[in-house]
Image 1 (cartoon, rainbow, N blue to C red):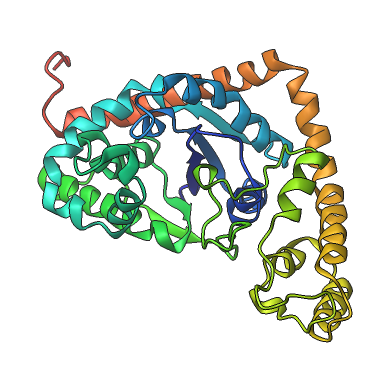
Image 2: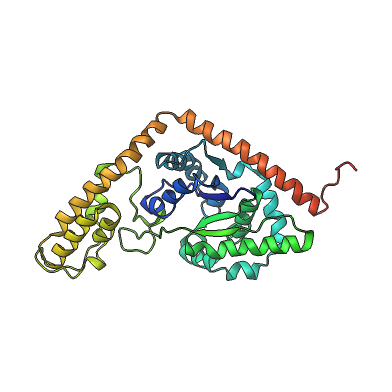
Length: 336
């Protein structure tokens, strides 16, 4: 039986935040014990909407790798690699672009949503690179024969697009590529401090894993609470309060029950509630930040982990490319 191989990754557009932590990083730590895991630093994909700011992308490569290592990703079990250093991915992207129509890309729900969110970047003219990033993502996945792709529900259309490309390729050129499956973890998308359904780097509503106590205090104290609660002793509704929402992530069951009961009865003020949350977040992130500090003091080690992983990933991608070119009759100089 083939070993199940996972491909996942992040765009280096900023440090990772608690939305990443609860939404995917904890899951990666668990899955690395069971599956062969490749983690891509998707710098090429980051450039699709940061093409005018390459320095931002470059500077954040080591930042997200350190965040991954800090939460418990083991470089002895997981292969980290840089997308731009695997030319086979770009080559596969070109080949796959012939197998999908522009109309199909424009219908992709995930792409449509992200284009709408990035109107300030593109205006009314979306770039070829951004519209086609699901094709590049299909190349990422298939280059390493990945069979399981951990995603949130909002990313399922991207995996289905990849599956369509694989089926189309295999129907034309013969059974060559593996059709991946989406892996839906138990974790869900985490809301932002402002109540937005998404916590995002570009939305200014995130608590980062590397944030110090001063930064956490500033952010939590500005978090949205029950807008109908004017005075301290007014009854509150924890169901519409972002502070209560984060207590569900960082506080004990007993603390949460007491907080909600006191809030509903107007016996707990928002400032008291926020201070308790700050304490719990700082304590929760302390061991992660201690481990991150270890890697911050050893930048050469971080670079070595990325180089070694990229070399290994390149070998795997070359094997796939050889199979693809053989299937497409592009092996012109092959002997025999």
